[in-house]
Image 1 (cartoon, rainbow, N blue to C red):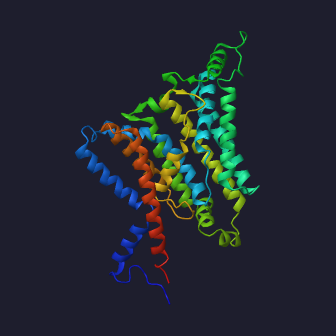
Image 2 (image 1 turned 30 degrees about the vertical axis):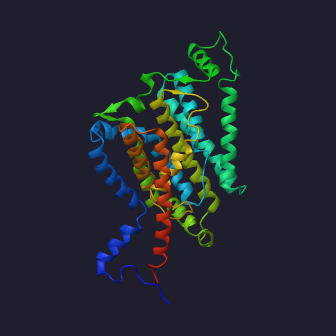
Image 3 (image 1 turned 60 degrees about the horizontal axis):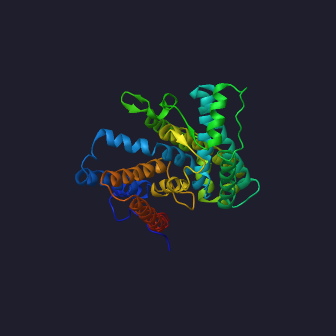
Length: 353
């Protein structure tokens, strides 16, 4: 028996528009963002100000940047639980190179290279060795965290009097386990252009690039095709290995940039920083409407999810609600997002003949 079209009982174009709006992955998240903004503006004094709205975006800028890269991996039906440790390693690379060279540009380049290399290794493990992505990235996460603990604060670095002053400064900090980046070298977060934080501009630029790549490149379309129906994509001649490896590399690049924003925002970093940070990043993708089974989502999904997380974190802080409730609210929204995705999937199955 043929399946009904969702708009069969509604007049023409209006029915199709309603159907498309319902099926657009970030729709529930965007609606919830609007509702929460209105609600907290009424019940939380000091919430509805330009400075506070900007603070929300700044707080989750690094989460949004990384989630935009991770989104490609999830769209493939894979996962990367090492994103927080890639971010941390990249933050170390940025800090060390920036302090030694006294040039932020070189620090950013080092962070991006570190992130891209780490991501590529994950991609090779998943695509070429065909390891389960959760296991492969969990293994690399533990290995790199251990190396950071061994070499940062573990006494592996010794200061030599003959070394240049900046190098001695870095080795001392590494020996103690904590690196502090001077405020003048953190302008990518604390700096402002026309009264708006540089990190906000960076997040928006990354969002624009990701949207362009998703819609206008063969690779971007291949990611959706592979996640939606892997077997059909292979038959169609889509290069599976290359697509997956590049997805992990892009994810690593975004982690590298996210690491720069993270250290520029916090100012200090130590080996146990961002422990468990991958949860909020993965949650941003799920909350934004990306299906964890792959194939369904939108380029803007993780951005919307990150903003929603930022609103929750900020509002609970403004209202002096215990930080433990933040995790509860985020978890509840993730659960609702998954349930909604299941409902939407059933609706999709009944749309076309």
